[in-house]
Image 1 (cartoon, rainbow, N blue to C red):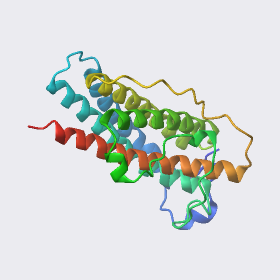
Image 2: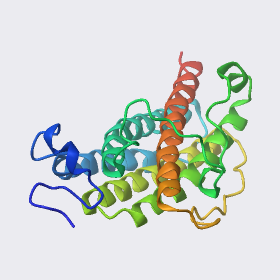
Image 3: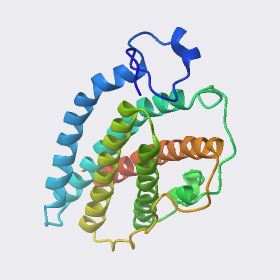
Image 4: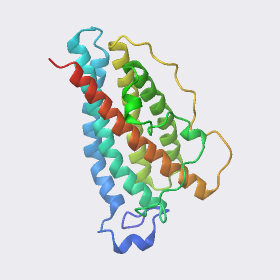
Length: 234
């Protein structure tokens, strides 16, 4: 339930004194329409690129550019969502230096974004793109589960909106691989909700790490797509 100040179930009342009214949750509601309009434009560009069946240099550049722009948009949007989600979880998750051990859960059974850069850059483009696609398939299911279990309506809406963009990114990566002549990897069957029942704290730790891994992957993906762009210039 939301109060008149836009606070949601799970919101820590102790933070009321440090958050300006109307508060983070109300500000998120006000920005959702702007994000939605921007996302529609990015997804339209990605779809137009995906429908281009020509495999020339121009279509490759266009496919990489639209994928890069969508990735940067999602990276920017996630920063806002993560801040609000950690506030929603409350202490100690919203404390600056808090970093619980990474859980070994089904929702996090994805390629690690912590691979050293020199090893990552040593992979072929096809291998890196395939790992990107696998990671986002797992993370998409995980974020959908976060949205399903979130009690705050405005935060749930923002997470589902983000899932739409993440689903579009998966399609854009597939289109990019096809444009570059790469075979698509098998789709992931991960549902994001399998595994043993967890207590409330363990679920919060998992949510914390889902958003952290997603942040790391979006940062790395943007670097990858930018490197691909530079290779095709000229």
